[in-house]
Length: 194
Image (cartoon, rainbow, N blue to C red; front, side):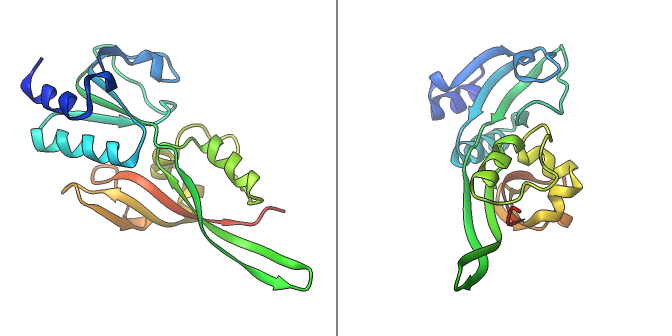
Protein backbone atom coordinates (compact mmCIF):
# COMPACT_ATOMS: atom_id res chain seq x y z
CA UNK A 1 0.00 0.00 0.00
CA UNK A 2 1.21 3.49 -0.92
CA UNK A 3 2.56 5.43 2.11
CA UNK A 4 0.01 8.22 1.60
CA UNK A 5 -2.89 5.78 1.80
CA UNK A 6 -1.27 4.11 4.79
CA UNK A 7 -1.23 7.46 6.65
CA UNK A 8 -4.98 7.87 6.15
CA UNK A 9 -5.78 4.27 7.07
CA UNK A 10 -3.59 4.39 10.18
CA UNK A 11 -5.18 7.69 11.23
CA UNK A 12 -8.71 6.24 11.29
CA UNK A 13 -8.02 2.53 11.81
CA UNK A 14 -7.84 -0.22 9.20
CA UNK A 15 -11.30 -1.58 10.14
CA UNK A 16 -12.92 1.59 8.77
CA UNK A 17 -11.66 1.08 5.22
CA UNK A 18 -12.33 -1.29 2.36
CA UNK A 19 -9.71 -1.86 -0.32
CA UNK A 20 -10.61 -2.23 -4.01
CA UNK A 21 -14.28 -2.01 -3.06
CA UNK A 22 -16.77 -2.31 -5.93
CA UNK A 23 -18.81 0.90 -6.15
CA UNK A 24 -21.78 -0.67 -7.94
CA UNK A 25 -23.29 -1.75 -4.63
CA UNK A 26 -23.46 1.89 -3.50
CA UNK A 27 -25.16 3.52 -6.50
CA UNK A 28 -28.77 3.46 -7.66
CA UNK A 29 -27.77 2.47 -11.19
CA UNK A 30 -25.70 -0.46 -9.87
CA UNK A 31 -22.63 0.43 -11.97
CA UNK A 32 -19.07 1.25 -10.99
CA UNK A 33 -15.70 -0.38 -10.74
CA UNK A 34 -13.48 -0.64 -7.67
CA UNK A 35 -12.35 2.24 -5.48
CA UNK A 36 -8.71 1.90 -4.50
CA UNK A 37 -9.77 2.90 -0.98
CA UNK A 38 -13.35 3.22 0.33
CA UNK A 39 -14.47 4.94 3.54
CA UNK A 40 -17.86 5.69 5.09
CA UNK A 41 -17.94 8.95 7.09
CA UNK A 42 -20.57 8.78 9.83
CA UNK A 43 -19.73 12.09 11.51
CA UNK A 44 -18.89 15.62 10.43
CA UNK A 45 -15.51 15.23 12.12
CA UNK A 46 -14.66 12.10 10.10
CA UNK A 47 -15.75 13.71 6.84
CA UNK A 48 -13.71 16.88 7.39
CA UNK A 49 -10.65 14.98 8.59
CA UNK A 50 -10.67 12.62 5.59
CA UNK A 51 -10.97 15.50 3.10
CA UNK A 52 -8.26 17.55 4.80
CA UNK A 53 -5.88 14.57 4.83
CA UNK A 54 -6.50 13.87 1.14
CA UNK A 55 -5.84 17.49 0.28
CA UNK A 56 -2.69 17.65 2.43
CA UNK A 57 -1.38 14.42 0.89
CA UNK A 58 -2.53 15.40 -2.62
CA UNK A 59 -4.60 12.24 -2.98
CA UNK A 60 -7.60 12.20 -5.31
CA UNK A 61 -10.92 11.80 -3.51
CA UNK A 62 -14.59 11.67 -4.37
CA UNK A 63 -17.56 12.18 -2.02
CA UNK A 64 -21.11 11.01 -2.53
CA UNK A 65 -24.24 10.52 -0.42
CA UNK A 66 -26.96 8.05 -1.32
CA UNK A 67 -25.60 7.36 -4.80
CA UNK A 68 -28.90 8.19 -6.49
CA UNK A 69 -27.56 10.88 -8.81
CA UNK A 70 -24.16 9.55 -9.84
CA UNK A 71 -22.76 7.10 -12.31
CA UNK A 72 -19.35 5.66 -11.52
CA UNK A 73 -17.04 4.38 -14.23
CA UNK A 74 -16.54 0.63 -14.52
CA UNK A 75 -12.83 1.51 -14.53
CA UNK A 76 -13.15 2.42 -10.85
CA UNK A 77 -11.49 5.27 -8.98
CA UNK A 78 -7.77 5.57 -8.18
CA UNK A 79 -8.12 7.35 -4.88
CA UNK A 80 -10.29 7.56 -1.78
CA UNK A 81 -14.05 7.34 -2.24
CA UNK A 82 -15.93 8.74 0.75
CA UNK A 83 -19.57 7.81 1.28
CA UNK A 84 -21.16 10.56 3.36
CA UNK A 85 -23.47 8.96 5.92
CA UNK A 86 -23.58 11.85 8.39
CA UNK A 87 -26.96 11.68 10.06
CA UNK A 88 -27.67 14.48 12.53
CA UNK A 89 -30.83 16.57 12.36
CA UNK A 90 -31.80 19.11 14.99
CA UNK A 91 -34.28 21.92 15.38
CA UNK A 92 -32.21 24.97 16.29
CA UNK A 93 -34.98 27.54 16.77
CA UNK A 94 -38.74 27.91 16.61
CA UNK A 95 -40.81 30.98 15.77
CA UNK A 96 -44.44 31.17 16.84
CA UNK A 97 -47.12 32.81 18.94
CA UNK A 98 -48.38 32.17 22.43
CA UNK A 99 -52.14 32.56 22.79
CA UNK A 100 -54.72 31.54 25.38
CA UNK A 101 -55.05 28.30 23.36
CA UNK A 102 -51.37 27.40 23.66
CA UNK A 103 -48.17 27.78 21.67
CA UNK A 104 -48.52 27.94 17.90
CA UNK A 105 -45.42 27.19 15.86
CA UNK A 106 -45.19 29.17 12.60
CA UNK A 107 -41.77 28.08 11.37
CA UNK A 108 -38.57 26.47 12.57
CA UNK A 109 -34.90 26.50 11.67
CA UNK A 110 -33.68 22.94 11.27
CA UNK A 111 -30.01 22.00 10.85
CA UNK A 112 -29.46 18.86 8.80
CA UNK A 113 -26.16 17.22 7.90
CA UNK A 114 -25.36 16.69 4.22
CA UNK A 115 -25.41 12.87 4.37
CA UNK A 116 -29.05 12.69 5.54
CA UNK A 117 -31.42 11.40 2.86
CA UNK A 118 -34.24 13.71 1.86
CA UNK A 119 -36.76 10.99 2.79
CA UNK A 120 -35.32 10.74 6.32
CA UNK A 121 -35.40 14.54 6.63
CA UNK A 122 -39.08 14.55 5.57
CA UNK A 123 -39.81 11.91 8.20
CA UNK A 124 -38.15 14.09 10.87
CA UNK A 125 -40.14 17.16 9.77
CA UNK A 126 -43.43 15.23 9.83
CA UNK A 127 -42.68 13.92 13.33
CA UNK A 128 -42.03 17.49 14.49
CA UNK A 129 -45.27 18.81 12.98
CA UNK A 130 -43.41 20.72 10.27
CA UNK A 131 -44.20 20.92 6.58
CA UNK A 132 -42.28 18.78 4.11
CA UNK A 133 -43.40 21.06 1.27
CA UNK A 134 -42.37 19.73 -2.12
CA UNK A 135 -39.59 17.53 -0.70
CA UNK A 136 -41.59 14.30 -0.58
CA UNK A 137 -40.27 11.81 -3.12
CA UNK A 138 -37.00 13.60 -3.91
CA UNK A 139 -34.29 10.93 -4.13
CA UNK A 140 -30.82 11.45 -2.72
CA UNK A 141 -29.20 13.21 0.19
CA UNK A 142 -29.53 16.79 1.40
CA UNK A 143 -25.96 17.65 0.36
CA UNK A 144 -26.25 16.59 -3.25
CA UNK A 145 -29.72 18.08 -3.62
CA UNK A 146 -28.65 21.49 -2.33
CA UNK A 147 -26.48 21.82 -5.44
CA UNK A 148 -29.35 20.82 -7.76
CA UNK A 149 -32.77 21.48 -6.26
CA UNK A 150 -34.17 25.04 -6.40
CA UNK A 151 -36.91 24.23 -3.89
CA UNK A 152 -34.38 23.21 -1.24
CA UNK A 153 -32.16 26.18 -2.09
CA UNK A 154 -35.08 28.55 -1.37
CA UNK A 155 -35.38 27.09 2.16
CA UNK A 156 -31.71 27.73 3.02
CA UNK A 157 -30.86 30.09 5.85
CA UNK A 158 -27.17 29.09 5.76
CA UNK A 159 -24.92 26.29 4.55
CA UNK A 160 -21.84 25.07 6.40
CA UNK A 161 -19.16 24.15 3.87
CA UNK A 162 -15.57 23.06 3.68
CA UNK A 163 -13.91 25.42 1.21
CA UNK A 164 -10.87 24.91 -1.03
CA UNK A 165 -8.56 26.00 1.81
CA UNK A 166 -10.13 23.27 4.00
CA UNK A 167 -11.68 25.94 6.22
CA UNK A 168 -15.21 25.56 7.53
CA UNK A 169 -17.34 28.58 6.60
CA UNK A 170 -21.00 29.59 6.40
CA UNK A 171 -22.44 30.69 3.06
CA UNK A 172 -25.82 31.29 1.44
CA UNK A 173 -27.26 29.15 -1.34
CA UNK A 174 -26.44 31.82 -3.95
CA UNK A 175 -22.72 31.45 -3.12
CA UNK A 176 -22.72 27.65 -3.29
CA UNK A 177 -20.35 26.31 -5.94
CA UNK A 178 -19.85 22.62 -6.74
CA UNK A 179 -16.17 23.16 -7.59
CA UNK A 180 -15.31 25.15 -4.45
CA UNK A 181 -17.47 23.73 -1.65
CA UNK A 182 -18.13 20.48 0.15
CA UNK A 183 -21.41 20.74 2.04
CA UNK A 184 -21.23 19.69 5.67
CA UNK A 185 -24.69 20.77 6.81
CA UNK A 186 -27.42 23.30 6.16
CA UNK A 187 -29.89 25.27 8.23
CA UNK A 188 -33.28 25.31 6.50
CA UNK A 189 -36.28 27.49 7.30
CA UNK A 190 -39.32 25.21 7.45
CA UNK A 191 -42.96 26.22 7.89
CA UNK A 192 -45.34 24.55 10.31
CA UNK A 193 -47.35 21.64 8.98
CA UNK A 194 -51.01 22.09 8.19
